[in-house]
Length: 360
Image (cartoon, rainbow, N blue to C red):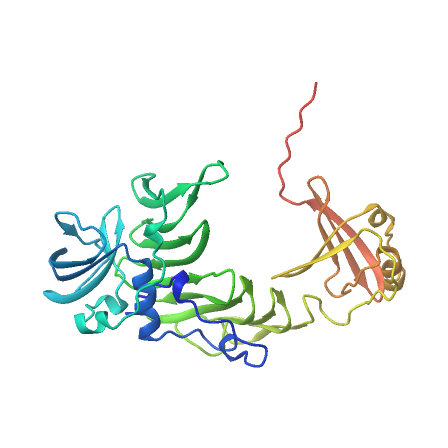
């Protein structure tokens, strides 16, 4: 069992430019990190004994315990398990966020460092039950515009359960468990430092990604069910954009995609050498590069050379992937395709944006 809670107060430090190793292999945990994360998100900590879906409390170590603590169905604890329990409230009872859902020895708990600032200590924090399966916390927005989510947010969809930790409106972590109490997904998304996404199939890791300062960074890898080699996908990012080799294999293990990126563009790249501007903007994101248009885009014609397009639009681009304007005009996109060094086609179509028009 890999039940793991991760929090805003226990994120790994960002790797330096000289040491990118955390971003080049599957993310790993240790017990100390899991304990710190569990303690940071817990709203009730007790010395107790778990039995038959209930918690017999011997002493409350943090928080306020109700008269009887019912454990959420997902918290599959060993019978008569005595020790320290880190608990989070859900609509179906308290969820245990202990590593491996095992009690923490009291002596070990006493040696742990408490967080400097616990999320429950925010002034004005209130519990909100939005529907039959969700429970979360908010406090009034100082600017007077609604409420800010902060703290634990638990919800059950289907037979599993998901826990999020919000930190003053920003989601720091999201963990999901299946109906057998096994962690199946985790997303750590700090604004600064190292974050990652993990996806499990049973006890097997089948997908992972790294993030740095909230953007994809380093290695991403996906696997086919039941095997590790070859992987399904292997891709590299630098500061939020593809950079380096991207490879994909089919279910038979045949390599079907092998592309090299340079900051989102596929070489060879047409470089604009001038200093003028046309108003066209190149925007990089985790799928590559896209462009925002200007009047000069409408002057691109089939048959123009890559050099002529570069001089007209005044941006770098890759003829291999073309130039894509997602919002070229209202709800239309424009894609400029190239072949043999010239514009081969100008393709337009609906970009999925729904627009409402009001007529007199």
